[in-house]
Length: 542
Image (tube, rainbow, N blue to C red; front, side, top):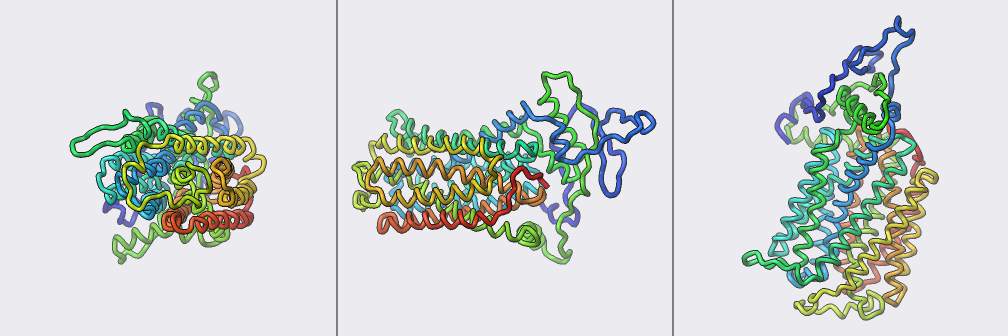
């Protein structure tokens, strides 16, 4: 952050939107509220006998309509969400072969899968805070670029420690885009469409999951995917890592070229002219086949939000730290306290359970090649890894990973049609409890087919919980805290994911039952605690 961030007054925001159209004019202030009108002539009281309309944010979103713009918004945001899924999950698919080239023990594999989550924990709150301060769009572009660039550089790392470092920095980028993308997306949506649309956005995580599994199935077992770059042999899994960075880089490009800033953020930041321009763009795209003209209305906004002030005697770093911690104090105080503690538990349990188990599915499937329970075949892993253990790659492992990834589809379709009717709270609680039961039986079954079926059930049901959490999380907090809150809680989730992967890596060879049964117990606890959340079905974004 530049030195100007330490000044007493907040840094003037750079205009992100430009337009050849004439800008709206600020006409007057009424009772502390700023009123804006389109630059077209506004009829006076004498002209039509009544004052022009003044619309709140929710009313302005409704006035802009719903249509083509939101479809394009869904595609761009969805591709960004899919790119995050690809970058996170690609590690799980490369482990069965990369472990020989990098000489990884099970503990090393646990650290590798945990490294991206450690980066996400660091990036989640940092980027979320900057998104609330500087804007959603700018943060998305930078975080997606960091994700893609360092994800690609990881493919060139000849040593485990360097590969680990590159994955960590890539995770810092992922940690920014995941919470911010949902805040950004939700702030363009009409209230009655919000639940279904956020559920639709969440389905792109499944698309990224399927894309990662499909790429792994196509590239890693292929004999053509080997490239010699000087002393470094680009094995097929390294080519796979490069391909997995393409979605993030292309997403950053799409946001920089096509998408506007969030109108809700602009209104809260006092950038009312730009907010009205965004509503105009939404209206024109949604009504591109209609002769309907953009209606004349004003925007009613509260006073521009103020930055947290700290003592002028404090050091620059101290003031920045104070500003960064201020949103955390707010979400754990007053009426937000109880829901924040509940979300803390829910994020921890679902992240430990989902990522702790999911990242190890390909390795567990490899251990069931000859049948039996994954925990019964620990002895099949040799103490000294050699190329014959990892090569040639077994295509069946990647096919099974693809099947489990595709099993997300029914759960995603279910949430799209049911979310606005049932509500996120009920779906979240029920899905966590059913996921708990499916994980318990993964440990119980003794056949490869049974393990695969239960893994698919876990995948299809757990995604309902994630979709519900995405909806609930965006609706529980006001605009000025939304990205910071989601960034903080996703950071908590990353701590849980790190813990889950380290626990699996440490115990999968010695006592496989412990991490699997622990996942089952935590998911059950999370489902019960989720019942304490308030119902947010079709609520207004404050």
